[in-house]
Each structure stands twice: as structure tokens, then as C-alpha cells.
Length: 169
Image (cartoon, rainbow, N blue to C red; front, top):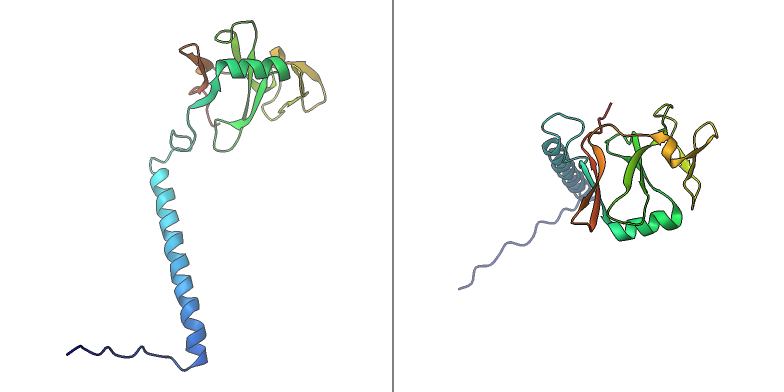
């Protein structure tokens, strides 16, 4: 003989019917928040502001031929706010010469004798930049990066920028 199941409990009070779904939603949102907090705590567990988990030390640009074509047609490539979790660095990638595998140079996106806060803007399609004071600068007048920040060409095909020398001051 099959067992009869008990009928579902029905709440008759409008107050209980209104509060139960809302309380369940609050509990679920709380659990999601706790889960996200746990993920964040796990990712930043070593206590350092900049790490491989948060900001990679190698920016993969792509094909040297494609990047060289872009620089040839539109001027240097500007990567805004890289290498730190605060966005304190702008990198400019330039190429000179006919060989796509050689002639790559990296600059920081502010004047060589200027302040890091004076981020330049590129004049589209040229090798010219305008600093925060309105001065026109050639790409070669931008700040050189510290040791450890340089372009890397792998197998004469793939281009990346090594950012291991960038600090998060």
C-alpha cells in the first residue's frame, strides 16, 4: 500500500507569505557576498598590492607583423593605465625600421623630464604626443622605462612587453 504524503503546509497569514520570500532572498544574497569575499581573500592572500594574480608582469601584444603595421600606419601604440592595480602607468610601444622583429622600444606615457602625473595624449595617426601643459612631444621625448620593462619578441613572431620592472609606488 503506497504511503500518503502529508499535504504541503500553507501559510495563511499575508505577513508571513510576504516575509518568507524576502528573507530567503536576503539569505541567498548574503551567501553570495560571503563567497565573493572568500574569493577576494584567497586571491590577495599574500598581502602584496601587485602580484601575478592581480596584474600580470607580461603584456602579450600579439603578432610582430600586425603590431609593426599598426605603428607604421597610425603611430606608436598607447596602452593606458597598465602594470599597476591603481592604473598609475601608461605605456607607449614604438617601432622603427623595416624588420618587424627588431626595432621595438617602450616608453612611459609622460615627458622624459616631467612628472608621472602628466600623462600624454597621442595625436592620432602621428608619432606626436601632447603633454598636460599642451606641449608637443615626439615619441622619443617620452620617459624611458626602468630596467625590466622592455619589448620581448619570441621566435621572430610574437610580441609582448615585459613589465616586471614596474613598481606600484
